[in-house]
Amino acid sequence: MTEQRKELTLTRVVHAPRETVFRAWSDPDLLVQWWGPAGVSNVECEIDLRVGGVFRVVMVAGDDFGDRAGERWPVRGVFQEVDIPSRLVFTSQAVDDDGTMHLDGTTTVVFDDLGDGTTRLTVHASAEGVSAQAPSMLEGMTQGWTQTLDKLIALVATAT
Image 1: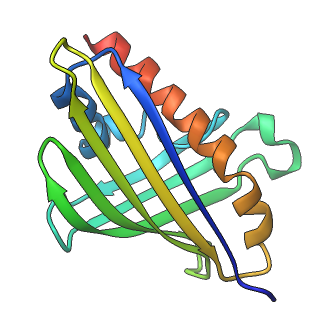
Image 2: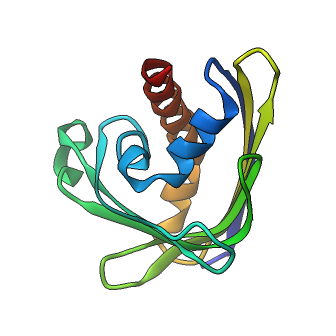
């Protein structure tokens, strides 16, 4: 298999204070409400918000995914930088329930306070495919992150 890599940067202006947006990324009870693309729910989440701490979430595909409905899509990682409330950097590995890795990447999230109760959120995600399933996962990365951020924005809009 040929190694593949994808990088993307998405920026959104979120109509919520920086602390609220940061909390949505760092509180497992909030993160499970928005993480993942449309049609995905989350059944497990662990966040140990410190350098070297664990980031882990298990997504489950909903009915919108047809014959893939019910599939579990675990993501695990380790925080490399934690600067509350302005920056998070964590490794991100898409794995199977048995631990087989498909994507190995890093996610950087920057929270800029715009001074008027809004936040500029910038997400830079990079991933390298390391399995036969990786090409289709990389192909959907932009759409997945776009939908994920849409869900985040909808959640924090109701919190303010």
